[in-house]
Image 1: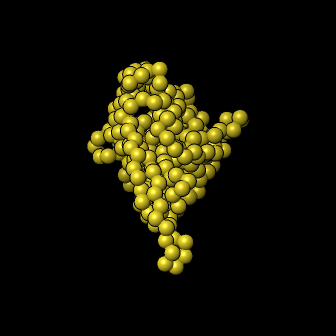
Image 2: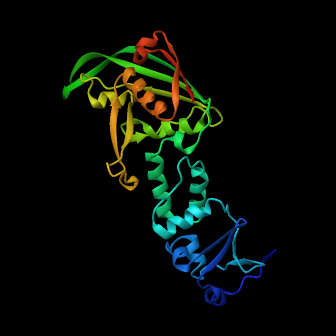
Image 3: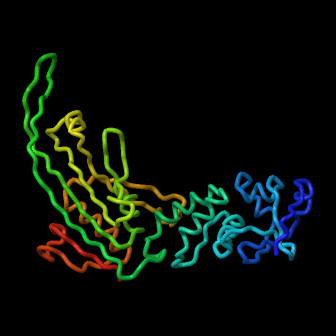
Length: 292
């Protein structure tokens, strides 16, 4: 049973001394005040500097009503200032949620870098997950007035190619990864795509690369948008805290299919079906991949 009669702030502060026994969701830990207050502006820092009263169980352990299994990784991070996770760790989402609850901002930042450098397949994922992709492109003729000066306009014509991708994936985490890696370039800056419906596993991408003969202001006037892909570049030291991002514009469908294959194959997917010609996968109109 828990002793819910917390002491006042002064007695609470004075009663905390090393070693500190913790009961986190039924898991028992022993640590130090220095570790628990490493991040002073976090909730743990506030608890163990006396700013927030603590509760104790009937054995005298400080009780924290949170998930106890991933708390060990939070303690390890506070001890070493390094995120040390086992190979194939599959509770990253839970760990991020707990780090967010405790408001440990440096840990949240390191989790973000870790996610950028570790494939989803190494964080767990459903075998048999499937991706189905249909791609299309159409050429449109655009007429516009090119202004040379006051009341001096020239009628111009150019062709633009509009690309459309309809993608379905049974693994929502992979859809989220696509929304992180691909961005639209608009006149207001970069924006992320979103699934068609929060309850559906579908993503639709539509973009129009700007041809050289189309001025930027006319391109923006038509509300066209480009498609950008971002890829992490980890230094040779494999220091996940120093991940840099490189961006590349997708100017044709072959480029998109190539980037999609890089991402999906890295996550453990295998090509299952290519239409119309399996030998010309970059020129496909539909594609199916299955996670093995």
